[in-house]
Amino acid sequence: MGEEATKTEEINFTEVWTTTWETPYIMRLALSAGIGGLLFGYNTGVIAGALLYIKEEFGDVDNKTWLQEIIVSMTVAGAIVGAAIGGWYNDKFGRRMSVLIADVLFLVGALVMVVAHAPWVIILGRLLVGFGVGMASMTSPLYISEMSPARIRGALVSTNGLLITGGQFLSYLINLAFVHTPGTWRWMLGVSAIPAIIQFCLMLTLPESPRWLYRNDRKAESRDILERIYPAEMVEAEIAALKESVLAETADEDIIGHTFSDKLKGALSNPVVRHGLAAGITVQVAQQFVGINTVMYYSPTILQFAGYASNKTAMALALITSGLNAVGSVVSMMFVDRYGRRKLMIVSMFGIISCLVILAAVFNEASNHAPKIDKRDSRNFARNATCPAFAPFTASRAPPSNWNCMKCLRYDCGFCSNGAQEYAPGACVVQSADMKALCHSKGRTFFKDGCPSKFGYLAIVFLGLYIIVYAPGMGTVPWIVNSEIYPLRYRGLAGGIAAVSNWMSNLVVSETFLTLTKAVGSSGTFLLFAGSSAIGLFFIWLLVPETKGLQFEEVEKLLEGGFRPSLLRRTTRENQVETP
Image (cartoon, rainbow, N blue to C red):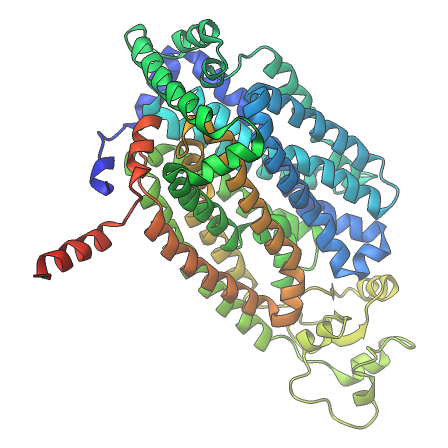
């Protein structure tokens, strides 16, 4: 069983629009459930801009990198729990109810953050939102997948990916809209309550997944929904396939049992599930270790590393990367059912690795060519203003040649740029609100996260290219693969396990990014991501089959004997021929 088994008739993207035009109910289902993706994207993206203003209001957050990382990553930590519980909840109570619970969590979390009077309250709100994100991350694509005809399933599940990236783009627009509004970050974080309320109301009017209904002996309801999704001549075939799958599940459960632990043991003892999890977990972990969420969570901060000191400027430029991510999701919808999941991911990974290596080189050059420190300017800037680490050099000794803006920032000091020429030597001073205000009063720019750089525009260009090659492949395809690669009886459980692996990887990356940049610099951090991406590419090639255009039951048969890439199958056959 291998790649040849996956060859199906190519699907024209116009068929998606034809099908949904003839049956608008399908698109209504996909878009309503996809609001969960919008909330997922908004709540993970909004913190990129909100954090800049949270730091201004709470001094502890500004001074403690670990506290910034906790505020950012707490949603991810909550998502791990939400995804883990969501798998069980999906199987027990259904996809629709899981979406409704996620909406309640989004609403409560948003309200908690709006009234936060201390960093720990923000963290609590981010945790509650994270529970909702975790449930939505696996439930929305699963609901859409089970509501979609097989031939356009990939494109419709991609609408969830489009709405995730659309939510991130919206969060950046909202961030910019509230820059000059009192309570900036509170508005930014609180707006997410609106789509949660909208989706809650919409989902009350929509049915449960027909596959879940059939599995729970509600066959009449299941048939009624299938008749609204499929042409009349296809309904009986779809019901027959469901019946076969459910009979197989029932036989398994008679042997395995009904409890969660029994199902888990049964899932891990099932070769189809094991091979599916190997592929599903691989793509989910690889998606995170390319470093995408450092870009989405910290993009304004990364652009400040590249030399754009203004909060507003950094957020406006970050809007470009977020917009490209949304555009890439549209590209994925156009090509995922034409060229296939596996090919899109492999091509995407090659592009990602190339961009990360170039970004590492750009940040390295920016660091090496940072402006020098002007000894006289640093000494005379203001009374007791000189950076303590640089102060000994202001008396008589000349500072070492490696003392530049980057060296100044590594000692937690600030750099006040040269008034006449930003790239000329400037002052290395104490990092404080007073020094920042004094620097600005002299018509100069104060840098504390990055230095003035002639290479800054290259960081924007290659961050944009990185997003362009990421979004159509590794951005949306891992969620599509995980919505269709598991047997129905284990789909909620296995999807939950894979989603947990995604969020755990996300947590590791988002919780360590700022610490890594302090330890090895921006250049070293991007180089580490390039290395982990290369490892991810190898395992995707080794473990992930093509599922384009296949019925769920065909995917199960494809995985029964395990997947092997064509190169390894050829090598095995050659060895067998050579063996006497």
